[in-house]
Every structure is written in structure tokens, then in C-alpha cells.
Length: 181
Image (cartoon, rainbow, N blue to C red; front, side):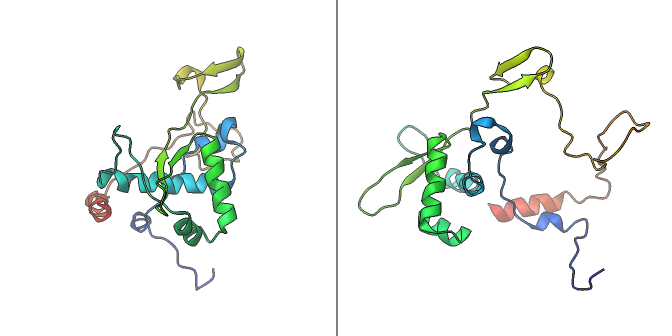
């Protein structure tokens, strides 16, 4: 093994802050045309959304907004103005954000919008199903926690592992949460 590699220990992963990008943007056909830049930008917008809630940035209708300038995004993502503008347009066209112009060289107010979970998918029992709710009888699990993806047949009946939190210091999670706030 390379001596210069810095491998993680079990308790070190929690020291990082993560940007969450909704999986729906990757599996829902409605969002399949979005570029990776747009999907990542939406994740950053949702991350900034929490800061707006803490700062009580809301309009007269109690809708939460945020300010995230294109220049800040260009610097953060190392992208050109044209690419950032395209990412914003893609998100706007999919109704994932709404931008309100303030004028006078003030940055736009960005309103994150909810993801539309209504989409068609093939149900092997009854053809095409249009679903607006995620009902358990219509879903098939995708075992993303399965470590043995190349497994042939096994004697085990379950693909899920039981997590053990024995010896885990849950106070570290609370300490990390307080740092964020």
C-alpha cells in the first residue's frame, strides 16, 4: 500500500460537512436531462436554504428565499459565467428554483422549489402506473447498502445488514451540529 495515503478511521468520517443532492434528480425521468452542474448547484442551494431559515429570510408570504450570486457560484465551482447561467436556467425550466429580480445591481432572490415526485414508471404487474405518492406496495427496494453486489445465491434471506452502534459516542454528533449552528 502507498505510504502517502491517508486512510479514514471509523470515527473520522463525521468530521466532514456534506452537500446532499436528492437522488430523485438522478432517477426521475423528469430531471434526467439536467447537467451534473445543475444537480450539484441544486444541492448547494438546498444547503444554503438552511442558513436562510436560521436568518429568517422570508418574504411577505412566508416563503423562504436565499441569496447566492452567480459570481459566488463561479468561484466555488470553478465554472464560467455561461455554464453557471445555463445551470440556473435548467433548474428554473424544471421548476426547481424561482428567481426574483431585485433590480439596481442587487442579487436575485432565489426561491428553492420542491421536487416533483410524480412520474411514470414501469410496474411489472400492471403496465404503466402514474403515482403521486410513494406507496410501499408499488416500490421495489434498491439495495444501496448491500456490500456484496456480485453475490450469487446465498443462504441468507436478507440483503440488509444490522448496524451496531456499540461504543459510538453520540455526543460527537451533537458537537458537530452545534458547530454548524
